[in-house]
Amino acid sequence: MKRREFISGAAASAAALAVAAPVKGQSPAASNTSVRRGTSGKSVIICKHTGTQGMGRGYEMLMNGADTLDAAIHICQVQEDDPNDQSVGYGGLPNEDGEVELDSCCMHGPTRRAGSVGGVRNIKNVARLARTVMERTGHVMLVAEGAHKFAIAHGFPHENLLTERSRKTWLLWKESMSDRDWWGPGLADPNWKAPAELSGSAAQAMNVHVARLAETAAEMGIEPEWRREAIAQVLHPPTGTIHVSALNARGEISGATTTSGLSWKIAGRLGDSPILGAGCWTDQDVGSAGATGSGEENIKVVGAHTIVELMRQGKSPQEAGLEALRRIARNYNNDMNKLRFLDMIYYILRVDGEYAGVSLWSGTAARPARFAVHDGKQRIEKCVALFQGTSVEWPPIPKLPA
Ligand code: GLY
Image (cartoon, rainbow, N blue to C red; front, side, top):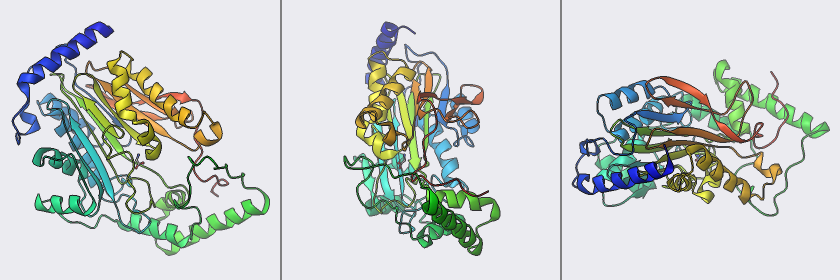
């Protein structure tokens, strides 16, 4: 689509919205049902490659006329309910105190509304909770205890979100007495220096440390098939997260992001996922974008909003995403000694159905950075990367023993 057509279509969409906005309290699903001008009539869903369990059903929902936010939240919720997905919801890896703290935000394009929750404990389905904030309050964001009380008032069950596996992995981390936690200045500190690669006796000490972790994991009863992953999670805290953007044939678009955030984080830490504009941003006139990866870096470039605004100015989804990644690189003066410790993937969907997945690093041939898409056919596609190669897990350690 040419830029002028895209923008004039967008203007027409805005005009259509003026008469289509539902009344307060009305379900998002009850929004405008006409096909928006400037859109392609395609239904497309884009999400993180690990978030595909509910994607087929989500697409079916769109085919049956469901609201785009309902479909996106369904996909988030399937992952939140899965005890084996340690990046979101039930079974998510906890903070340093062993408490699972969940974050989520969502945006509903047709009604131009948004909701967000952060630092929520004991409530599993935070994507739905973010939508409830959007639908049932005059606010946009609730956090911590207030969000929990609000969830209980709306009938969300209070649950222990730690699975045995997550609890034991956290204990394994605790027992490793890590001196490499999140206290103290981080990567963005101007005086930060890359640690020297381990060699000689330091490397040997690390190998002993890793071997001890393996023994402790066995003593704790972490199942043999999960042990290697648990040790890797202790040594290199993952960020997880699922983002979903969904477009229906009527040209309506929405987005949602859900996460348990960075593992072993300081209690109360919020990453990018509950931050509207960073973890997710949807504008019915233009498109939707979301992120997974180093949350702190994404907040500093307001990645999802930046991408949508760049698309409004005529950039393609891929160009807009790469530009947001360049801003992350710029924040570090393109210092590859620092950027190699970061990771970021943006998931981008324009209202005409054009989409892109872009990543800071390409990954390897065997494990490329990737994303999932469904436009009638569900598949995994490779991201377009700003840098070739793989990021280095933080902190750098010798290879794990087999
Ligand atoms: N991107 C998820 C987080 O940093 O919490």
